[in-house]
Amino acid sequence: MQQKPFRLITIPVSHYCEKARWALTKLKLSYVEEAHMPPFYRLATNRVGGKSTPVLVTEDGVFTDSTDILQYLNKLVPENAKLYPSNPELRRQVEELEDLFDEQLGPAIRCWGYFYTINDSKLIQSKWTQGVPFFEEALFPVIYPLMRPVVRKAFNINSESATQAYEQINSIFNQVNELLADGRTYLVGDSFSAADITFAALAAPVISPPEHPIKQRPLQELPDSFASKISAFRETPAGAYVLRLYRDRNS
Ligand SMILES: N[C@@H](CCC(=O)N[C@@H](CS)C(=O)NCC(=O)O)C(=O)O
Image (cartoon, rainbow, N blue to C red; front, top):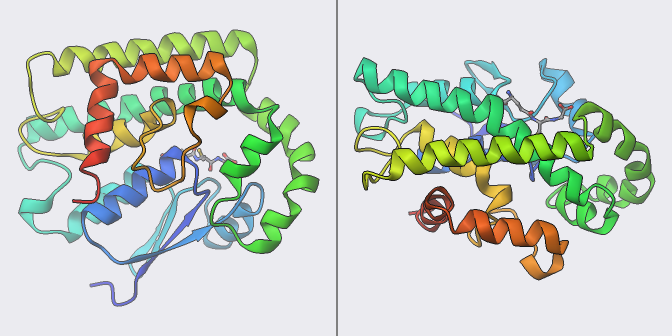
């Protein structure tokens, strides 16, 4: 059993990092978050063999993918706290949704969000620098002009990809709307699971829940076209679901 708190290496604003953070909080496991801004997180992740964030460093090993992190944490907690159901069919459904959200929703939201914000250095500064060491924050004005083209290329940010990403987000929201249409409380079975955490954490950037642990900018400070779409996403059943899960996040 882990003696010391876990180390969670993050880019704090990353929605995949929020997924891992939420699981640790929900399972009441003690951890220390080591927050870094791009590209400095690579100094921390390289040292333990990871390339992206989140990375969870434990006495049992290092986990470099958010799903591996949740699966590992799940093994540490009693039956009534599990994030994956013991029933094999329900577990299959949770894992299938988690993969869908990780592989499609997460990248689509990142692409769409950056399309609206990448040229607004002030906005990106407020997002990238929350909780990071002072020297990283101080270097933002020098680093960001160099990082912007790297981000644009790495995540293929342009108007065409943003349009496709927006359609993909809508399509996944519609799938979640359909799941919720029978009045169920959670996405799978009758208990909270990794599918719920993954959907809410990865969808959060297009919902901007007030209870999010990373401070959200008021909608009126965001570009109008972006803010109006966030308002519309909030009004969908899936969006209302994310807002509800965030209201209950710390209880
Ligand atoms: N499949 C990974 C994806 C994680 C991911 O894409 N993390 C992003 C933050 S949003 C990252 O570290 N990006 C920096 C990079 O790829 O260099 C997971 O679920 O952990």
